[in-house]
Length: 250
Image (tube, rainbow, N blue to C red; front, side):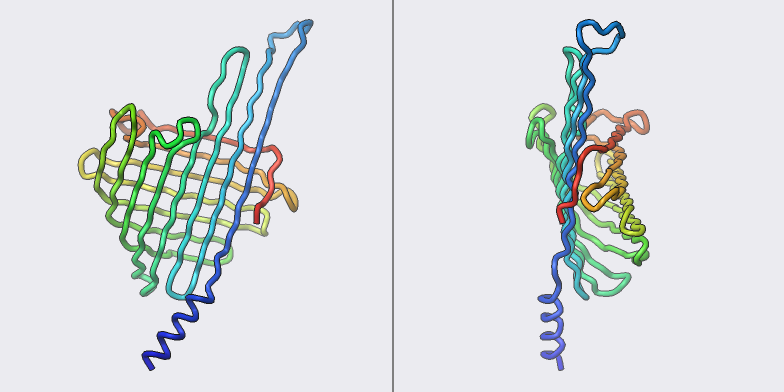
């Protein structure tokens, strides 16, 4: 009987397939005036590109979710220029479902940027328990928490290592295959320097078979970005809208 149960479980694991999804967004805006233009407008342009990829493998006993987010853009007005969103993130979470209220997990998180690639770079490894509050066709809410280790490599501020506890909440809302809203809040409580907060919100509106509009809002309170930070003065926020051409990868 034990052998039969083991074979059945192994078959279920092998039968599980990866479910992949992704969106590439691009936006461009430009203003130009000729020499005889009498207004105050001058040459200005901005562009940004974003990539979002997700891969999820579910079975009766496991749930393995990996995600990648990349955004980069630049703006130019007159003789000045600036960088717009500049983010590279990778996260993978593996959950083993012993029971509804007992789901051990292990996760790995990485964050850096495009402009100065891999400097700084933040790594975080965590392990603990995950809990699914609800999961249906309309929306899903999952929370998890446990111990965590964080490593930051920064050529300007120096490298350091911290240990602490992590708590994460993920909420997803899908409506009529045309709208998807996702929100993730991650708190890292360090034993030595207080807490860091990262809150990411994304709204995807499918406006055609191959077109998607993305609106995003991010909140950072991160000691690796502002060492002498204090709440709530040094909260960083980032809002972006991609209204240009975009298409679904999968």
